[in-house]
Length: 144
Image (cartoon, rainbow, N blue to C red; front, side, top):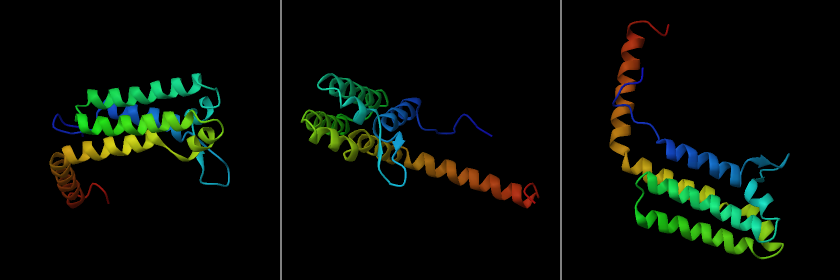
């Protein structure tokens, strides 16, 4: 069913999404809506943990660059990563804030919004083609 004109999210975006999930929301606290990830856990290691997580956040920004994201978007992503890093340096407060401030997820939302808006017309055309094909298949009786 895939054709050469089919547009999909780039590999770099999917990798960035997985990394952000691992850092910010991989684990849920049962019976609550609270989620956390490696950022919160590594943040418990003074200094070193925060350096590791800011490095991983920088990798997400690097992946955005590989996708061709504009400098203004990457600057906003850097701002979120730096804020997350700096707040994480504050003993106890930083550890708690890592559970609630999801800088990497915020960056992924920025990146996804940019990518979809950049490819909006192509996605719209692709969706229309798929719906047309589906309708023709229904008329032929493939889905009955």
